[in-house]
Amino acid sequence: MNKRSGVLYEYEFFTRALRNNLEVFTPAGDHLPVDCMVVNGAGRVFRVQVKGTGSGHQHMRKSKRYKVTAATGREQKTQIDCTKVDILAVYIEPHDLFYIIPCLELDCIGPWFYPETENSRGKYEMYKENWEPFKANS
Image (cartoon, rainbow, N blue to C red; front, side, top):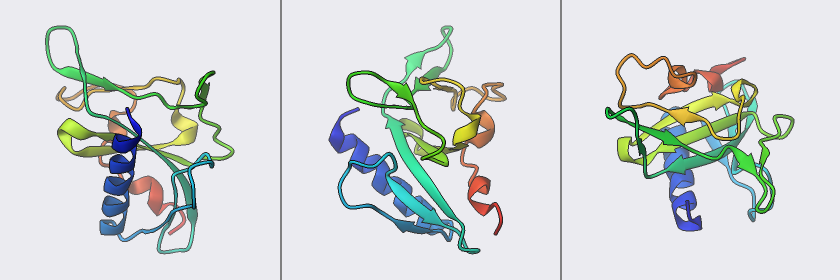
């Protein structure tokens, strides 16, 4: 993913969050571990990292699967620090959808997503277009 795509994915997230009655605040610069802060109706603040992909990989001669790097660091990749990030929002561009994943549910640096597989049992499929994590304590 290049920088331009990353910015587009972030703005797509901002738009979707606003449509879900959430407030979005962005930090100045890109030196922080989060891309934005989201505030729900109860005033709870969520620190959000946005990732995305525009290309998939053929999976078992069937539908495509998609992968993002849920990590930080340019040289040495390390898993996202859940003491600094609450939610990972993953945008799958070809399907125009988000996975809204609580950071503590991540168990790897490179999670896979299966938006084309009906009734997928993929670990993160329950978070597809699921904005409920933002409603906690609302």
